[in-house]
Length: 193
Ligand SMILES: CC(C)(COP(=O)(O)OP(=O)(O)OC[C@H]1O[C@@H](n2cnc3c(N)ncnc32)[C@H](O)[C@@H]1OP(=O)(O)O)[C@@H](O)C(=O)NCCC(=O)NCCS
Image (cartoon, helix red, strand yellow):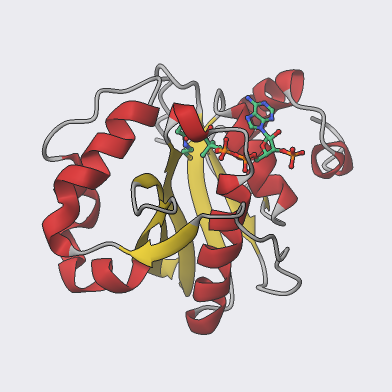
């Protein structure tokens, strides 16, 4: 029996796939900001950014290890901070992976957050360009998962060529909810939503 995906505070789970790594939008970070890799002694900083940014869930002290603990050596290659000119970390993104996403080795955009005081300045767009360029060095497809109420994030991912994965359980209902709040050409192209 297929168990329907559970609704949580951020809505229903949604999955998005990018079937190739072509034509990644090349968007520069705003002036003064740059990307740098995370170090393994900076789990507290990652946790602090997420506590600042996350509107729906409690970010616990062990959240980072729950997400990345199975491959800590990959963290320093795949998890990044965006920093301002003095070096203060204001956001994070990861160019993560899944060795068996529907049977293929796939890149995974994972845990994207920008501190509220720095949102709506184009930081996430620049972070996505950076992380997607990294993924393109290692993988030929990419995917991500998020939740239906995260409309700003879903718009960003659609703009970067990710498409709704309609094979996922509960996809039709979840994407109908997204489409009520987000008008986007890629959703219009999906038709029956
Ligand atoms: C999602 C998030 C990372 C976006 O960061 P950001 O730096 O503010 O994003 P940007 O300024 O680069 O904006 C990206 C685009 O999304 C749009 N956008 C942002 N919030 C939006 C919203 N609530 N509704 C619609 N569009 C939105 C912006 O207008 C921009 O589009 P444009 O290029 O047409 O102007 C940030 O809001 C965040 O950290 N949210 C909380 C954590 C979260 O939900 N992360 C995603 C987990 S999957």
